[in-house]
Length: 189
Image (cartoon, rainbow, N blue to C red; front, top):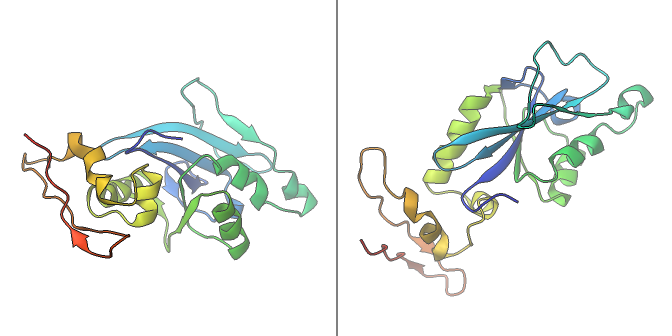
């Protein structure tokens, strides 16, 4: 798993630059580690049985991962190998997702995000970072390793200053036990 404040994401891509294909039809799945203010390319997994384009991805160790897509020729399950490839991720972004794929991803504890239109990978990462820095939904807080209560902001104290130097105000978070909203105290300066 990633460090607190980091989210490991997977993006389905045929071009390696955009989220431009459905989960089951993805020729490649690109992996990034995303934090509040940075992102790092981790790896790309290519599925054999199709032309993956002339782009060559490279991981930290200088190679790429290839997974056999036996279902391509057998007319069988194309979803399971892709779920296996993303099982260590928190979130997968894809252009299309079947109900079967969504259930298999949920069972693997991966949160699927289906997009209506293709987007540049950089645009998707920037959107995710805006969500992380704002009021992240519960699924994103869970993926970030933050607790589901008021301690969420305390894990993020090193990045509580906006780009213009202003200190961010604490976010009111609903207390699950008592259903009362309360303010998280600011850390001492």
